[in-house]
Length: 132
Image (tube, rainbow, N blue to C red; front, side, top):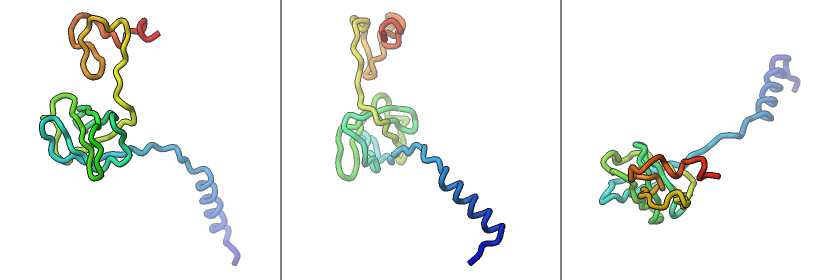
């Protein structure tokens, strides 16, 4: 079977595209939310999540995954859960929650993310002198 010149051009083009196919893409695992009660959200579909991992709700509110079950994940919501709606998407970030501790934090009151909430001065966490 012999290809016509047009078919040969198409074959060469397809072979070129297939050999230079870009595999660099990011896949985010997202889940769906079932009702939030007492600051705890139940989310299904996050099969690869780790205990203690930070998640982000569609409204921008963050939370931490603590109760890993077969059908769903129990997530403690950091902040107001009134902006979180049933069936909202939830994305896990891949990072385990941690709060850095530095000498510059002494005497400050910080939130769960390590950000100062006492109004004493500039952010002690983001201070470049502290980061060195």
